[in-house]
Amino acid sequence: MKLWKKLWKRVHRLWTELDQCFPPGYEFTWERNTAAVLLALSMVLSLQYFVKLRQAVAWLYYVDRVHGRVLRPDAQARTFLELAGQYGGLFVPYFLFLAIMAALHYAYYHRDTKSIYLMRRLPRRDVLVGSCIRVPLLGTAVGILAQMMLGLIYYGSYLLVMPGECGPAFW
Amino acid sequence: MLEIRGLNKTYFDRMGARQVMFDVSLAIGPGEIVGLFGENGAGKTTLLKCILGFLPCKGEILLDGRPIDKSNIQRLSFATCEHSFFPNLTPDSHAEFYQMQFGTFRRERFRTLMEFFELPRRKALKSYSTGQKNQFEVIMALCQGAEYILMDEPFAGNDVFNREDFYKVLLGILEPEETVFLSTHLIEEVERFIGRAVLLKEGRIAGDVSTLELEEQGRTLMEYVKEAYGYRADRVNRALENLTGV
Image (cartoon, rainbow over all chains, first blue to last red; front, side, top):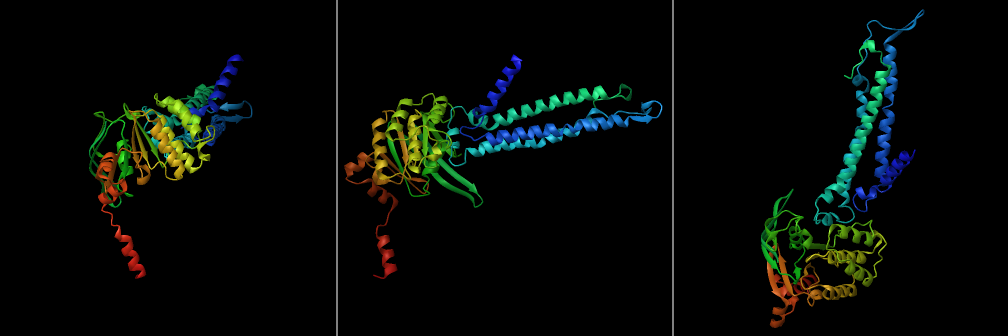
């Protein structure tokens, strides 16, 4: 419980103090929230996989009056990638938004004032590049991590419900 | 010493290639206060931006014999009428940012100047008036801790009293090794504060004179500028005569 509290505190702090990762003075709330909504939406929509998995499993069986649900003799399980592969595409808007974010961050230095002149005069040149791509990179890492986590859950459930006799396979 | 050797700048746009700087050479020593004058489009801003590396150009720009790069860029600061601050941040946040990025930031000077010009330190800069924004822009250029302070029309939009105050403060606070290269149209106003005037005309150096020389010759800076530019004083009278027929 303590560990969870600690972890939650860390995540909350990162969420609220994210301004240090954005360009100085950047109003980042809508961007942060939009990215979070897009990621959440991609994850929720990918849950359709379970419906597809259920249908795929159902196809492997026929119903017998005597024996009930019976595995078809020629039943061949669909591979995991066939079932889940398309859901990776749901994350495309999220990753696209991250790319747009990087462009918006750079454009910020030309908006209202020419703060780009200050950024380009900094002795540490990586400050300018870092302020533009730090959050998109962080977002990409979070997105990939989320995909991997979902992938593991989905693959685990695939192995769990697919009958071994039908040759379940990753691809 | 800031040296510019054989600087050429060409813009490439839809109209084709357009050269705007022609073989400009200039040397500015430490402690000098140099005014950069010229008509609109003469190349003043382009020259400053080339020095700072914002625009690619041909020729050499050296700071104490070394090209300007990330190792010595902090020896230059820049105040521009376009403003280079972050409008959503407060002056105090800027001070923190400068402190973090430039180890040479002059905090005490910053505090003194902010107080002198009565600028609120905890208000976002976007809520400042244009005059206040200009003041803040110059303050940051002066407080960065740079040896060469480049200014491009920094007082556009400030009233005359305010400008007068600034010139005086500038002279009062500058340390012997601090150099100012100031681009402005306010020739008569800055005459008393600069030690040298550089004139640009159509991308070429049209004049380079110390105010001491002018004094010895009994000429004003304005007279020198008019002569260097081939200003025709009778032009206006002739035009009026043509218009009114008198």
